[in-house]
Length: 537
Image (cartoon, rainbow, N blue to C red; front, side):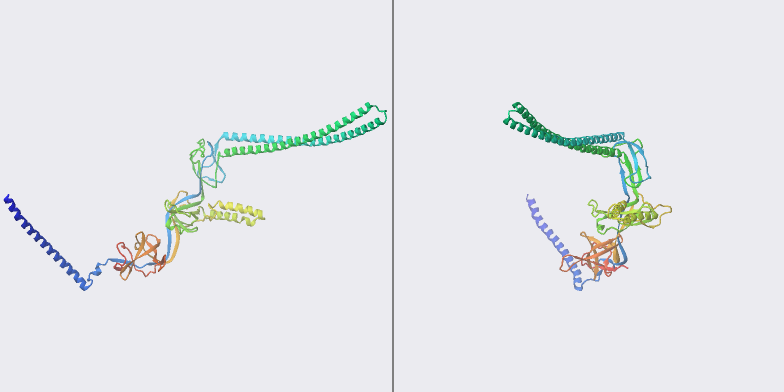
C-alpha cells in the first residue's frame, strides 16, 4: 500500500512536465506560421498588388454584336396534312347492305347515293302512311259535300221563315176580317131580332178560329227561325269538321314524311363533292343504327382538292401570328421541295394542356389549270349579282354566290385557298399532290428585322429565371438583363432592359454594335468582377 502511494506521488509531477513541453512546442509552430503569413502579406501591403495580380483575374473571350442585314423571326414545328373536309358516314337505321355504288378512289358529288340498305319494313310503313293520307283526303271530300248539304238546308230554312211569315200575314188578315164580321153581327143582333143568337155564335167561333190561326202561324215562324238557326249551326259544324279533317290530313302527311325520312336513311349519300377514302362493308353486311349503338363508319368521304395543313405554335410565339402570315411547308413524303402559303386561320387562345396555339393553312391541291378554273368559278359566283336585271334577281344571285363561295371556305371570313408556290427540286417523276395523313414540318415567318445586331447563342445566359448578357466595361463585368426576340439556335437577337430614372416601368433598347460582350462561361462571374478580356475576331 505504501508502495502504491509512492508511485502516485511520482507520476503526477511527471505528467505535468510532459503537458508543458507539448504546449510550448505548439505555440512555437503557430508563431512561426504567423510570421511567415505576415511577411508574405506585408510585401503586398507595402508594394500594392504583385506582378502576378493580373494573372489572378479570370480570362474571358468577348465579341462585338454582329450586324445582320435581314433577320427573320420564325417558328418551326411538326405539321400534319388533313383533307379540307372529311366525313365518316354511318347508318342511322339498322339493316343489311343491299347495294354499294362507289368504292375507294371513286369521285363523288354532293347528294349522290353511295350505299343503300335493305329495310322492307320501312318501305311498307311508308306505303301504309301514304294510304292513310289518301283516306284522310277522301274524308275531307265527304265532309265538304256534307257542308254543302248543310248550307243548302240553311237556305231552305231561311226561305221557310219567309213562307211562315206570309202565312202569319194571311192569318192576321183573315182574323181581322172575321173580327169585323163579328162586330157587324153583334150590332145587327142588338137592333133587330132578324139574326139569331146561333148565327152570332157561329161568327164568333170563326173569329176565334182566326185568332188561333194567327197564333199558330206565328208559332210556325218561330219554329222556322229556330230550324234555320239549327241549320246554321249544323253548317258551321260541317265547316269545322272539314278543318278538322284537313288537320288530320296534315298529320297523316307528316307521319308519312317521317316514315319516308326513316326510309331515306337507308340511302347513305355524299355530304359534299370529294373522293372515297375507305369502305368497311360489303353487300349483305348487317349494320346497326349508329344513334343507338357504337358502330364503325360504313364509308369515308374526303374533299382533297383543298388540303388543310395544321401545326401547334408555342405560346411564346402565338402573339405574332396573324392571318396571311407566310408559312413554308416541308413534307416528309415529298423530299426536295418546299410549299409556300399563308396562314388561313388560327385559334385565338392557348391550349392549357400543352401551351400551344393551333394554326391552319389551306392550300389548293391541284394543277395550275385546275386552280385557274377554281378561281374563275369563285369570282363568277361573287360577281353574278352585278349582271342581274332587277333587285330581286340580284338578291337571289347574291345569296347563291355566297353559298357557292362558302363551299370553298370553312369560315365566313376565310380567304379563298391559295395555290402553293413551290420551290426546290423534287426527284424526277414525283407527284407534288398532297395526301391526307402526310406529315412534315412547317415554318411560320413571324417577323423580319432589318440591319439587326445579333450575338452568338452562348452569349445569353439565365440566372434566377431571367436572361442576361455580360458586358465588359473598363475591365469589369456588368450583368445586363435582356429580352430575347429571336433565337434560331445559332444567333440571338436581344433587347437590353433598363429601369427608367425615377419612374416605374422598364425601357427596352437595341444593341449598337459597340458593346463588348462575353461570349460564353458567364455562369461564375459576378457584377463588378474584374476580368481579363480578349476580343474574338
